Image (tube, rainbow, N blue to C red):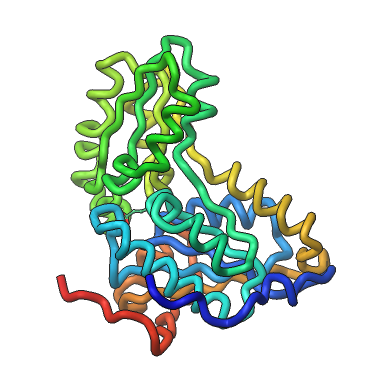
Length: 287
Ligand code: DGL
């Protein structure tokens, strides 16, 4: 990535109490709505902007430099509307770009990684299964996570891009079979904890729990991210006035008309707008 993030360092200049500036949340698609849901539950007063990069979905199968560039474009856009903090609601983008965004944006950047640490604490048999994207599971960040918390454990990983597609498409006929194919091998090898290492997968939690049964814990990171965001917003003096009725705006780089019903299925409503792409942004590849 050559250019720096545009727009200066609004995180610092916006640092005051009763700050109604929005919090930006982004992902490749609608998976990060699982994080947005946790954020909204903790912080009803905050104004939230959710950015979905549908023109480039899925990120999990793209190379690191591409995902980093997309994270830069979306963060630039969020800074352009005065975001006071950014949530990387995506494990793949965290692995590719979180350190860079933190260094370059000057904003509080809250990111996420698969919940290996809580899984290590929860497992009784010492075997955990991690579902994620190819990008996350192949990343240096994930290897470091395993080195740090996975010692003495058997960690079985399974890239599951088909589950990302299933959440976006809502194809319920094949969903249960896809979930079974992804999860059952982990259970058969003795995993007693399943880590949902992609923000799309919490939308499949009912199907996953039905397959693994009550003896297997299913862990995701949405509420931990929401807790950390709240802590950073409060400690940075960035909180919205508590009397504010927080709003949500939804942006996509895809076709808002075509995607509105998916937003409604996953979020329960909301207006979807086409994200204004900055002049410096790369154009999506046709694929
Ligand atoms: N939801 C994203 C994640 O947490 C990425 C899914 C994709 O675009 O492949 O990794």
